Length: 495
Ligand code: AMP
Image 1 (tube, rainbow, N blue to C red):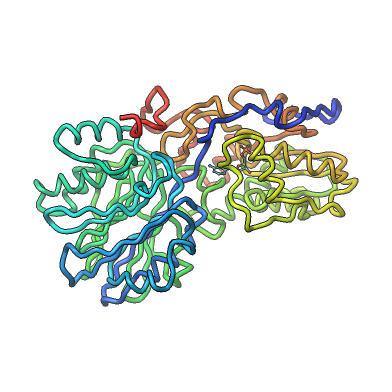
Image 2 (cartoon, rainbow, N blue to C red):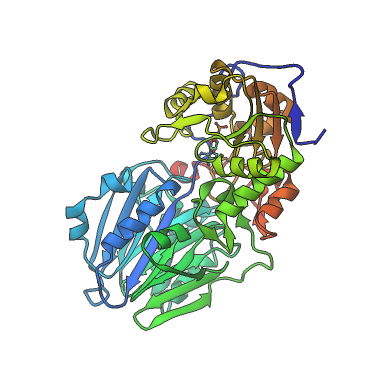
């Protein structure tokens, strides 16, 4: 039997969910953030473009958002900013956008990976220093934020937030005092950062984009007429009708001014970049292309690979909306088993993943997804999702399918078992929360109540992204850099 495939169809083992799935703490795995920056060299106002860019990146964070804009021909300390808790469409209205005038700006959508969800922790962070006002939006997680912050505090810095991004913003402002340009200050600051980061910075006259030396976090460059754009994902460029120019390279920074664009190495890049594999598996939007790989293609390939490595005798293939749909289509194409919609999704219910207790998460799953009974009754089903973290979603869905009369449910997961914490932006600092880290595939299969369970292999994971160098430490524990031993989750809050 395939090592990653457990087949319990003979035993029909079924343990009720909620009782046997390990309870997770309030802060489980969390998603990343989305960042966006734009400079219109013809002086046109950019607030509405940032708004649209953030709407296209909304899937990367729904806790809070913000926009900061300034005019490159205005006073250097004149930055307008508006931030708030909630979705982009909730935080901004027409009046608010009209009040944000300027041709240079950055925006942020947040799903916290460090620091709690408070108004102070919203981004962009805006600070005024001797050269003017600087706005910074950050995606990622630093592993040395606490030590950098302590060092800055000892030299008199005062912090207003509990997020690592403020350590970066303060670092740039402080380095600027002894640097001849903001680029040099960014360089000096970046050379001290450890972890995953993509940054967009609006300094009074320049738009700057930076990507960590491993390229863990995505950032791409686009162009539309007189405007240059930077965004976490290419889907935000398409949403604005901008042309994709290229990805920012690992360890690269770009400065955009009215004179054009220039690129410079921000730190020495490692020989082998390590792009976050979870972007392709789950985070990124289907229509984005990151580091030359289409997210849609990667997911389709993962489903096809699953069909080859973990085949199942079934009547139909269904995906968990929305994260499992593309891999399910890939499984169906490869296996010839018809694709069907087994669930109807209520798009107006918020995220189920971050509810604090297993019971709440389970009922939230039921609120969000309902079974299409006529489709599944008396059917043997292959059910595809992108990942199992705690097992809550899958056990709830299998129970619902069985209640609706499904005969068999064969679960296929388009990633390998999630075994190790991520320190770079996916907030799972303790392996304890991950069901696969303490249970065999057979036991997980039994706990979620499936007839069989199969995961993508590590080899197929590599193929799904066409050999792109990846960080897949959450699956194989091989981190691209040395990582802290303990739990760094609330470090800055506890300082
Ligand atoms: P769980 O119910 O805890 O096993 O979580 C698995 C479900 O959460 C799957 O449907 C995934 O699509 C989704 N998921 C996986 N990773 C994340 C993440 N980092 N943030 C939010 N949802 C996620």
